[in-house]
Image 1 (cartoon, rainbow, N blue to C red):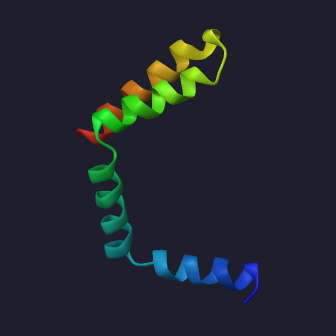
Image 2: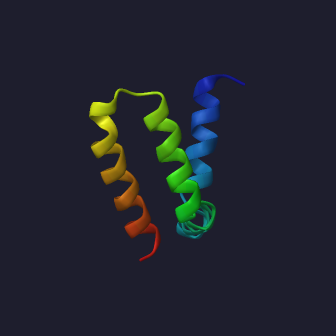
Length: 68
């Protein structure tokens, strides 16, 4: 099975709205505020201080979207 076949199977699997909604709901369940904060902290540890504000902004937006 080549990469093209794998991409085709992935597209086919995601073509159903029910499957997409299930995946979105699973991602929202996994992306708790605590996990978002943890990921943001890890990014900030490995990047220059000048990007901290951007990381915080993205984390805040992720939390807002997840809590809708």
